[in-house]
Image (cartoon, each protein chain N blue to C red):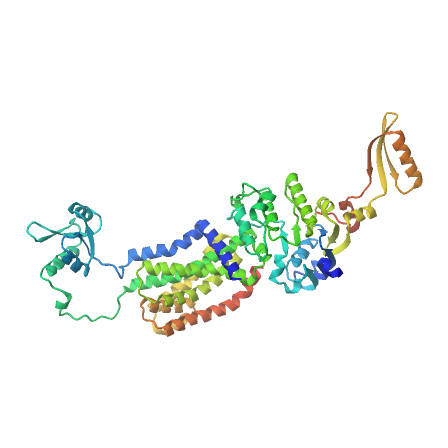
Length: 291
Length: 334
């Protein structure tokens, strides 16, 4: 199979300047996303995440570079492309004077492909019973869920999610994450923009760190942890009635032997591998925090 | 494409009806029509109304119908009740001696009672129109001039209302942040703009039709009227888009649309009050040409050539304005 056919997004040497000069918001950004992959685009506010995403979906005009989304050249966007993509915005954007159901009914009729039943989506995001209330009367979280539901209405092959769980309570955020996982299982490709490293760690196959408009690193969370995490195990155990905290290298033979001895002789209270979090790796790689 | 344009129009109409301000704008043409009818004598109004007993004298009923508005009641009591009502209707009733008497409240204008008395006498002596020796010579003005001016101005005003609703709908899209969502659907930018514009055509067209029907202009060429309305609303649509884009507040957008009233009423004043030598000062205003075209439509004297000439000038000026504003509209809706 042609490698190119398997790619849902191909970006090469992307540049964008809002002032049309050398002051670039996005500089020489290149990456590819395979079909069925969840790709996390991580960075602090103002890093260039939204600019890149808006170029990919055609909300911003492509100035320099080459971008292909779902087989379409973004330089010459065809309306048909939007039948294949869906986007859930960070800021909910629904018609406040229309009910939740009316919002979805209106949006579904704009597509030329088979669409989902709006009521099914309403149920999926937990808005059942509220579907006939005007969206203007919804809480922030409910509007966010409606925006999220709308992004699925055309069964997108390429799904853009901008901070999908921001502002949601943990239970609803968990439901949203489950929906994202189920979509991935069905082969949907997902471009996840976030500054929340935990959701990226949970969901993404690969992540890109972007800072000051430049991609600093692209890899899978697991590989990053292996590469940047310390190869240590931290153990808490009781020895002669006293709680001892100790750490053991997993690569030095003497320490490995000592760890085996501790496990066999003492009462272990806690034991953790000293993995780095994505946030720690981000700070280590970019020298910047995420806020 | 057409289906999607219609969907956007349908959505706009639905939410417009739910908003008090836009709902009010939608019914303004009807309010105008009623006000015009109240303040100016109608072209189809018969000033004298007579109530008669049903079946009492069919010949007399037919005779009166030629010269007055006739109402029939079944019983004498019904006739008496009808006369007691607040309007100036009077009854013509038979007495015991086969003569007729006029029943009135007593506060009717003299000319009403005298007119009915004369009609009754003419009927009695079987005097018809053919017996008159008077030749009528007129200037061909069968419509009260004030009424024509009022309806003409109202037609132009209604064309602005469509633009006003567009401005309000664009502000709504901006405050709800929904334009980006529409741009991520298979609706082209042109389709979106066309869909948004539709209400700016439909409201003036329907409003004008209602206005003309209610005010009694039923014998004019409606195709002429529609052509004038369709071209005159282009400017309002363009200004509606610009005001929608430039404002984040519904009241500001509606308020700024009022700037169109100045050239509108200026054109009417210029045409009606100023001498010919000052007329070229108004040639650049599309409303000026719309007013002249509408005047021909309302007096039913314009040929297709006249109407096409005036609507063509309005269209031409609108195209120039469109070329100036289109980039701003396109950029503003990004």
